Image (tube, rainbow, N blue to C red; front, top):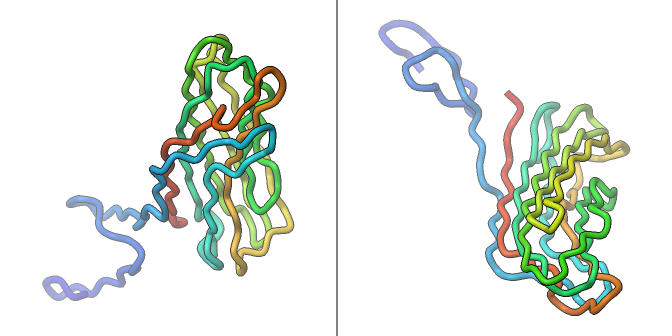
Length: 181
């Protein structure tokens, strides 16, 4: 680009931020889910699963952000939410008990590539259960190969009491890519 006689080298993955010389990275939504996905009986059930395409996280600092929301039934069963990256458990809520109340959950996953074979992950979940449950977990996932597809998923499992189909129902999700800056 040439502007009034000055030559600029512009990274094609960034754009100018307003009138400043700062730049911001181009990011984007990779997936949106808005179809109900419910747990099945007492089995651990994939609620939403997204395949991160090979080389998406090709640079240290590039990241994937997922936001998930849904409902927990009012049955006496215990409900468990989990998040995984390529089969590695990132988060386990433990048994959430929601008797007599329809409750909601919001689960946030942030995964940042930290080296050519590792990523740092943080998962936060909030519910409005009778205990107003909130939990955060941090972990490092190793032995990853970013040149191959990676799977990010959340699961739900009901147990005990009157566990039944749809005790946990994911209602919406968004998965975003944020490049290294």
